Amino acid sequence: MHQRRTGRGPPNQSSNGHYGGGGNMYGGRGSSVNPGRLEAGGGMSASEMNAGIMEQQNNDRINELSEHVARLKGLTIDIGNEVKEQNGLLDNMGDNFGNVGDMLSGSLRRIGTMLERGGAKHMCYMIGFVVFVMCFLYWIMTHKGQSGA
Image 1: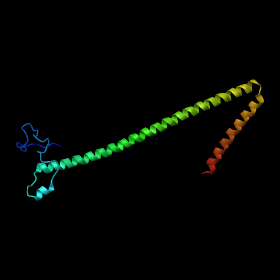
Image 2: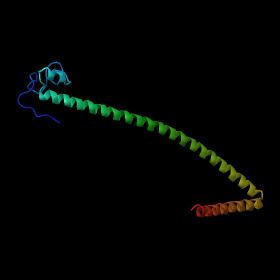
Image 3: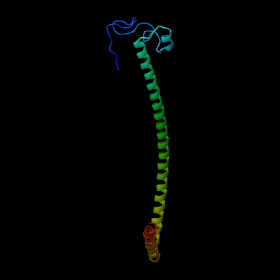
Image 4: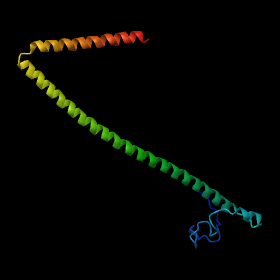
């Protein structure tokens, strides 16, 4: 969004297009539009009005960007907190799975001990119980699906 420059520029503009003195790009007259100047009869040039409008638009866009940055900062903080929480849960799950593994290895060791002592009768009871529980759960699931509809 550049303006085309004609042969003549503001009085304090040098031939290379840079403004001299005061560091103000708009001829040292200030960067805001002064509406009271129009009423005083001084009039405002089109370039001053255009500069004021462009500066206002830039300020509005800067404000919008700062709001977006603040929102993104909040999101990244929330994501970081969520990641820390999830890592803690995963660590806890890893510990729990380790405990379950220890429990299973202990159970298998006891079953092995029971089989070595000749507890075939007890093993048959245990297998029968497991089969009964599986059949009971299957029966519950099939009847629940029919009566719930």
